[in-house]
Image (cartoon, rainbow, N blue to C red; front, top):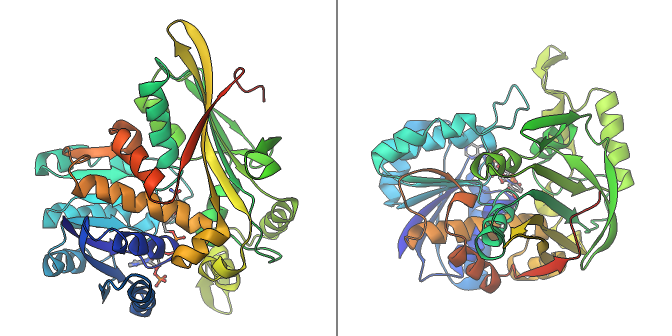
Length: 401
Ligand code: NDP
């Protein structure tokens, strides 16, 4: 059905490319490009041995727009899937506009010098993509991504509107390491050390990072402590569904993780301000990333399950209803299927599904879209057949935490 160019050969890129190869009727030719070509080659070798499919590999610095444009032309790609880092979003959108190719990513643009997660930079491309007749889909990972599509699905089929939404992200996995992050450590630590923020009664309410802790009994995992955090989908959900009175995001962390982050923060190792070290300027957080375990290496070691979903309350025919919609994913099963743990799997599979939606023509209206603005039905159907089945449970009432 279509040729795709994936940029970024990390944990998420690896899963997405494996799953694309498992759907050869949709992804007829797969090209994979990243800064370090050997990482693309390793993924291509694994895909070949598991599926028999060939993946073409290329070295690319995505910050070089003309190099990306040339590669899009060389590969004949009909879609660019950006699985590099949030810093590359705008340059890759520019390359897509120049080459006349649609765009998809999993995380919103972030300026490297400032941990500021907001969609304004990418929403500013709305007119350019519309005028070029191209679609750009933002945030097709799990959260954002699946959790946003789940919200639209509930709003479409179960409720007349959303009054409250809580996105609950639980990783009940254990990798045996004293401290390791499940995806890119730099992005992960920037997220968790930023102040918490949620949407309530038409405004943002801010609280110190990791200051609100609630125990919750997650299906398939059991009780874990979850912490109130800011996450980018709160901005897009509250914008696109203006009836929302309260939107919050929660993520689970073990006590050991919190202790490590607190100490690292106290000693300045999570800072993104440059410092001089031995006559050379370094950024402490980037140095920390270098010494921490590579999330890509954790797949084999990680046991346990993730449980991610939404609890949504809203009216239906004048009666208030609350639904919990979620997916449970097993780290070891993911590793057996594609050689990665569940955090990369739960992001890479939705990236592949979003790409399939675009190549199949379900999600190709010109403009810049967040996933909750698009038809949820074919996406939700594909989650069930591509390794991320979901369940809806009706709860007795709204959440009381
Ligand atoms: P990794 O750090 O494992 O991989 C990133 C890849 O991008 C690496 O291969 C890296 O190359 C490559 N890259 C970085 N800069 C450039 C550049 N200038 N040009 C070309 N390639 C580049 O990250 P993950 O796989 O863990 O995450 C990928 C994306 O997914 C991130 O944006 C992350 O925020 C997002 N994400 C989204 C989630 C969701 O649910 N929505 C959840 C988890 C992650 P090299 O190896 O040479 O550095």
